[in-house]
Amino acid sequence: MNRPSPQRVAEILRNLYHAQPGNEALSPAELARAIQRETTCSRATAFRAVADAVRTGAIRYTDAETEAG
Image (cartoon, rainbow, N blue to C red; front, side, top):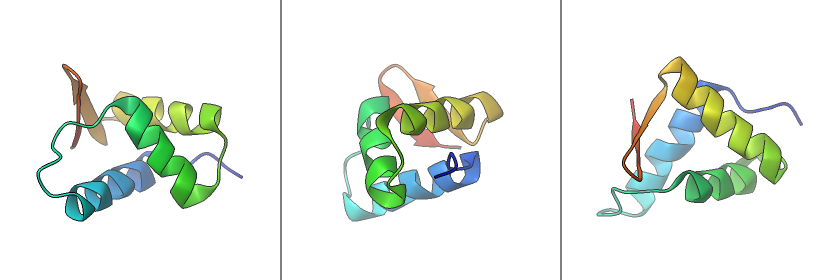
């Protein structure tokens, strides 16, 4: 399995927000678990995908929140 693109990570994050209204603060670990469920990639690959998405600006992570960018 290839690492999900930053755009795919942002899409998964948006889907999480729509599925769980009011859940505005997601930890990187929660996002990584959602990436694993959606893509069947490994835990390490999911965390690397989160890091890539933050690095490219596809999502923002600030003070224990992950936001679609």
